Image 1 (cartoon, rainbow, N blue to C red):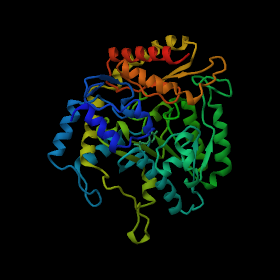
Image 2: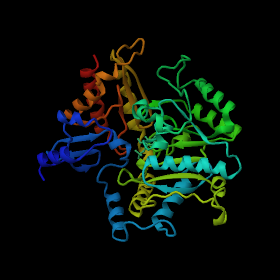
Image 3: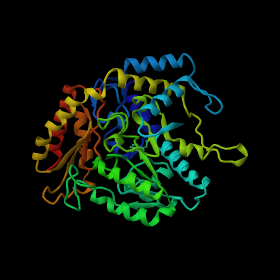
Image 4: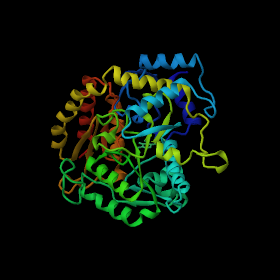
Length: 448
Ligand code: PMP
């Protein structure tokens, strides 16, 4: 098929995710033919550095020879089989490796097939746990403002991004939402590097007053991704762990975006030195090759479901593609590469490069802040620097930057007025510098 035919058929039959389809009248979708390391290559020959890891999934580059081989080898054995009553080597090998790396005593792995599905599983596990140990009044979940945990109804109910959630509000389960950290516009006038997470008082108040009704608190550790790459202090997580312990509430960590080295540590919780009761992982788990997710939990939670069948305490939850062998085989290879190729150890010069660009970005009269955690960096454009006044969302300056960046050979997909980098961990320093330069040129053009 030639490029025009692909676009014509796409426009005729395809409905894209998180997209106002009408935008395609002026910016049609770009057919991608190949991937090569950090690059995506379009059918018309254009090349783009994938600075957002294709929605934060690609970890070790496109078309990675080791991942290709692991996938092909598994396909030659079996692509998929039912996972109830059956098991396979890649699943148990992956589970073993995840439990070994995971913080605390997370020792049980439940498989699902996308991020939202892992969040749903974790919420249901937490709820059912309290039902089965005689605390049936603990039914509600706490999340923070600007949280993002996926777009299925349960995950959406604990999300705090109005754009994705507002219209569905009448059909969402009711939980509690508290003001989360807002370090760029800190109401306490503090810095994220030195504060004691004073903003935690909102969470402290709610949980101390309503813990009898609360099953768990769900949070994205260290970085609230879709909420605008909002980076906050690990002290917040330390205080959350202590609060959850004090009031018998589950700490549910959503590391779907930040796990697998994005923050410079294998798991983001390591920055705080704490362990959750439930840990959701997806995205980078297969290096961005295949949909797979997991919810890890503790022996204690697992035991509350472990009874004679007739007691009906099993976790009656499943997805057809649970534990998909192709995805698990690739995920095992991802974990091997992370260790054998010293991926985390290789990040420092690239993090330094990002830091070195901060002065340039922050010198711009419409850049409020450049922030970084590990290999994730975000640049927030503002209408007025002094008062940190945002540009009205209707002006779509981020979208303008996205289109400009494509012309300059980079795939940047800003969140509102925030441009960010979350490249494959294997990006080279030269490629990263190119991305930084493209972002700068875009900001100079769109932020005025
Ligand atoms: N949680 C977080 C923190 C995420 O960033 C995402 C996806 N952006 C999800 C959950 C949902 O994952 P998925 O899109 O695979 O359902």
